[in-house]
Length: 343
View 1 (cartoon, rainbow, N blue to C red):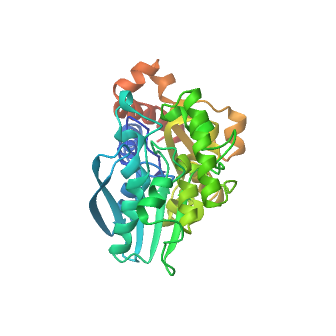
View 2 (cartoon, helix red, strand yellow):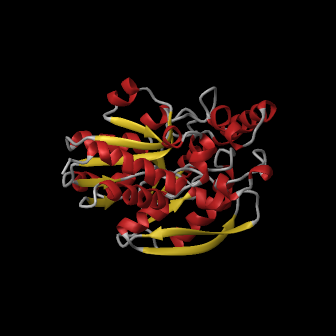
View 3 (cartoon, helix red, strand yellow):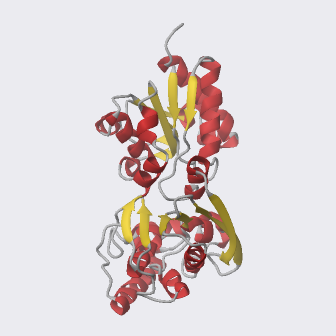
């Protein structure tokens, strides 16, 4: 059997390449003769640069930038052979860079993303793609814009693409502060203060707060649009770079997955993107996830044939997290018994 293995990261436990390797190892226990094509994925959040570097090649450029709380951190961007620079916002200001007990939603900044943009241009990039997601900040991209030099300072002739996995606006009940602030440690009072700051930032800059994706990355999407960026789908950007449609045509089954397979997974995230490719290729698509919180009717409507949970297989959330790679491999082994042809 020929299988394309294309998972996202399992946030907090496995990177996308680690997840792909674990799935492959488990699958081979049940189907030793399988041909497995590993294509670790990203939707623009953590792992964006890593998965692209594995597939498109190019040169990694390491540089010291301002971290989410101001201390310097080492971050990498990818300069591909075609002149495109891929920048991962989470590499500079990612939530994962701050220990859980030290998170400060009010102070976290996107300044380091501005540093990465400067380096990309200094390296001669003719196009810059910024993966927006997984940030610790809710500053509306203000740190990035001011660090870069201000609104309107982006050079003409260099495309700036804002790769996001969500289409939230900047303000309001569906905006950056209300939806994502609590995930970054903000309580109800702080969410209200962050919303006020963002409103004042919009008044000062006159950007399109209602634009789809403006609220991505704690409003970093808005800031990048102020610089002249154009929003694109993060997962579609990766699908195209990895030539996933072409690779899907050569297999019998597509496997994808992530830590929590929930309602947002069926919007702009990796499982939906892989399912879209599977539909176009007339191939079945199966999800392996840490937990499954989507009903069969909902995921079937998105082109997904089945979804399996590590937590259900392991017996409890604690058991699933104890050895994530081993548990994911065990799940893949069990799924292969159902999907691999009997010999």
